[in-house]
Image (cartoon, rainbow over all chains, first blue to last red; front, side, top):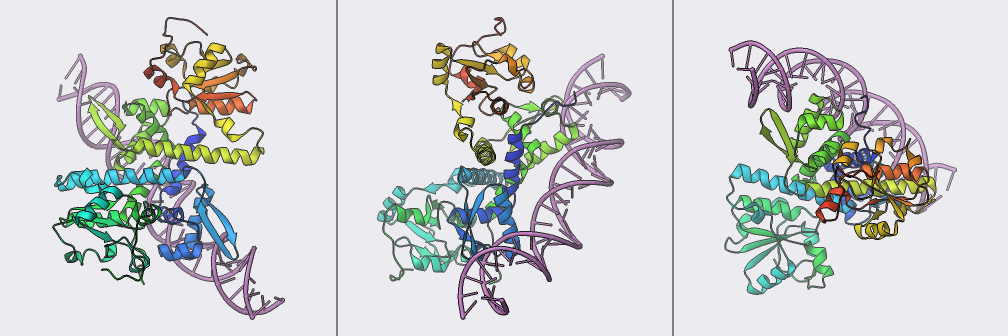
Length: 226
Length: 226
DNA sequence: CAATCATTCAATGGATTGATTGAATGATTG
DNA sequence: CAATCATTCAATCAATCCATTGAATGATTG
């Protein structure tokens, strides 16, 4: 029995793809690209990586067939390849969140249920509770994005400033965090911080862009609100 | 701006998981485990890997939270962890198939449409065409599994014997291959062989176990049929 | 066409990974 | 409790991966 297993090429292909996804920088890049076609330079800004390094990771993604490129003048634009790639990203993330939640439950001994901790809130519920004024809406995006447009009544604390500024948030209301979109992790991050300090918090299911798409009102840069 | 990007732990977690999936052996192991709890020894038989090697890969999977273990006497049984893991596997595979199909289209210049090449056939269509006798049903599982139960009228050629035994298949009918379940790749593999030699072939969408679940008839070990 | 900008290539060194070997552990059997 | 079986651990070497550097390419501008 020399060849108990002549194993199937689909596994090698899948493994290639998984290995390509197996590096945080590439995942970050992919997630940025998934939000829209972007040039290399822009991606270096967004990630803080070196140019050559970014380029190499991008080419790795390209070899694996996860992104495609197109030239625009001297820029090279990267976009997501067609196909079920976003599904993989979403699935990966949900496994990671799931495992992470389980881990924390084990450590903390379950002061709150794990489902509670990760729970999302739908637009409908958000609207209802906004009318009731029973929530605080927290925009955790960077200041400039907040200035460009925000959900009505939201207050802005970028996630990296959240911990020191927790005092600005009321303890007697549900905090609903949101950020740049379904793929944005800022709000998930914010939730972790909030929960760690005893706040009751959830995150908006679909983020800011989807709110726009749904044709619901926003505040623009001229109102001042926070 | 020293820290353009303090990047989010979820990406590291996801990358860990992806890296764990980034090896064909581990994917093969996971897929076997996904079909049911299995001991290490059984997995070594199924994969043809060394024992220590298998064990290490399994522990890698365990560290990543993708599988869980339980002891049964002197055996250690591995099972899939709870959560959306099967989603990731499915998504990964579908991306791999997608990319692979595109690749072949580019190479072969599209002698047949890619969708045709990968196309699955539903139970409904299968039943209809079985009544018409316009198809050949091909069971590509190992002989022993075939002996334990099969779809009515199926003939059995294990996939590793398929190429030399192609003459047994009629050229004037659609060949419908099936194997052990939605996750089983044998039939996809068979399709590749068949297509490469000019057969017209598809694979059954859901495999043998789902056929059982659907309450449709089977032949058991006592009938002889091929 | 020289200068510049955006991106890629090539080469280096340090770190991680994977297969193999042989020994160690844990559970069962007589 | 000695023997056996299933699994894991530890150590090794080769192969691969990643960040960095500096040079090369390709497209645009004056």
